[in-house]
Length: 104
Image (cartoon, rainbow, N blue to C red; front, side, top):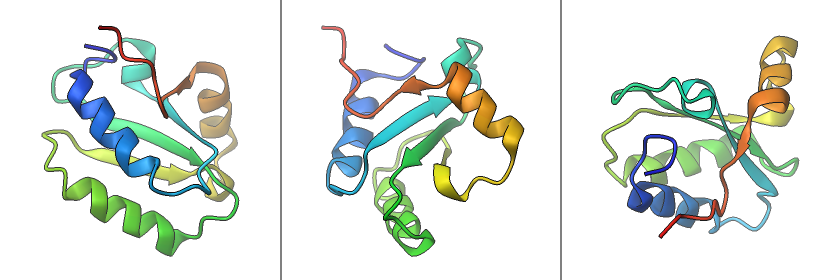
């Protein structure tokens, strides 16, 4: 398990992100990136993709909902975040999530 998530969950999420070539990177932040997660902690993910609009984000959210993961997944587009403290947190503590190497 990585970030308190089974490898299958990470792979399923990456499969969704890899369907859109406009996505440059996805960053995990929050409690899971800090190693302070609890079993029911949500999954905070920030997508870097200047070309994506909010409607595109909603489509990605629906695809993730269709995975029926037992955790809430909070997605954000980095270029739409207007909270400087959140941007600073992601840049300082964020962990690259897209195509995260899964330890065998």
